[in-house]
Image: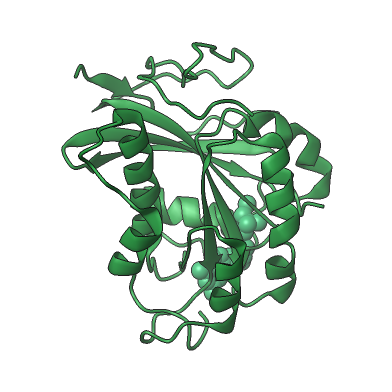
Length: 250
Ligand SMILES: Nc1nc2c(ncn2[C@@H]2O[C@H](COP(=O)(O)OP(=O)(O)O)[C@@H](O)[C@H]2O)c(=O)[nH]1
Ligand SMILES: [Mg+2]
C-alpha cells in the first residue's frame, strides 16, 4: 500500500460546533490525499480547513470527532493524546472547531486520525451538525463526576443518530476517571445500557487515553481493510486492555 504524507497541526476554523444536545454519510474511509480527508463517495469538502505541511507518512486516514457537554474534558483529552500534557486548572474554552492529527501504527498500518475538537455550547450546535456527516468515528464524552453530563448522553445519541453517518464508529468515554483498581463505577455500569462501547479515561493522568484512540483506529482500520480473517471487537478489546478505574475521581 502506498504511503501518504500526514497532515499536521492545528487549523482552527471560524466554524463553530456542538453543545449539550437536546445531535450522514457512509463512513467508509478511503486513502486520503495529503490535503483532505476524502469520503468513500469521493466527495471532498472544500469548506473544511485546508491542511498543509505534512511530515509523517500514513496509509489510511480517518476523521474522528470529540463531542459532549461543555467542560467534560474534550479539549484536554485531545491535548493529552496529541502532546502528552494536561491543561490543568483554567477552563480552556473551545471556540468552534479545531483539529489535531496523529498517526498511529496499528498492526503495521499507519493510520492517521484527524481528530476534531468541538465546543459544547448550544450556540455552536447547528454548525457542528454539518461536520457530523464527514466523521468516521465519534467519541462521545461525559464527565464521571458530573451527573448532568451523563444524563445528557441520550440526547447526544439522538443527535448523533440524526446527523452522523449510519455506520459511524461510536464510543462513550467517561472522562475524569481515576485509576485505583478494577472497581467499575455506577455510572459506567449504567452506561452499558446504551449499547455503545464505552470506557473510562482521564485526560489528567493520561489513563486509557491512548487506548481510546487506538481502539477506534483499530476498528476503523479493520472496517476499511475488510479482511474477513481479521476479527476485531471494539468493546472486547477495550475491556482487555483497559486499566482499572472508578473508585474515586481525579
Ligand atoms: N480532574 C480532571 N479534570 C479534567 C480532566 N479533563 C479535563 N479536566 C478539567 O475539566 C475542565 C474542562 O476541560 P476542557 O477540556 O476544557 O473541557 P471541554 O469543554 O469538554 O473541552 C478543565 O478545567 C480541565 O482542566 C480529567 O481527566 N480530570
Ligand atoms: Mg473544549
